[in-house]
Length: 98
Image 1: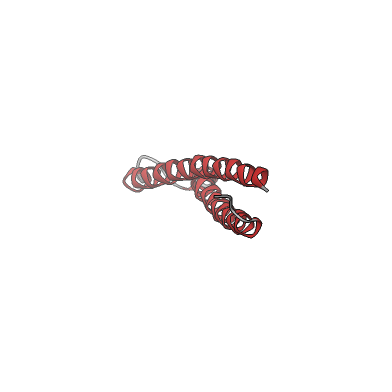
Image 2: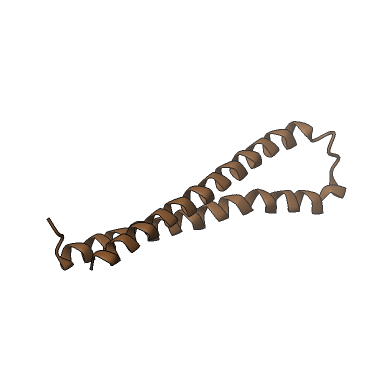
C-alpha cells in the first residue's frame, strides 16, 4: 500500500527531528572533547608554579578523567555522524516516494 503524501511528509518531519537531536548530541560531544584539552592547556601554562612530581597523586586521576572524556567525546562524535548520514539516506528514500 502506498503512503499518502501527508504520511510521507510526517515521516520526513520525524526524521528531521531525529537529525536535530543528533546535531545536539554532536554539539555536546565536541564540548566534551574540548574540555580536557583546555584543562591540559591550563596545567601546562601554570606548570612553573607547581612541581609535577609532588602533585602526581592529583595529576594521575585528572589525566584518567580527561582520557575518559576524550574517548566519550570521540565516540559520540562518530555515532552522531553515522546517525546523521543514516537519517539523510532515509530522507532521500522518502523524498523519492513523493
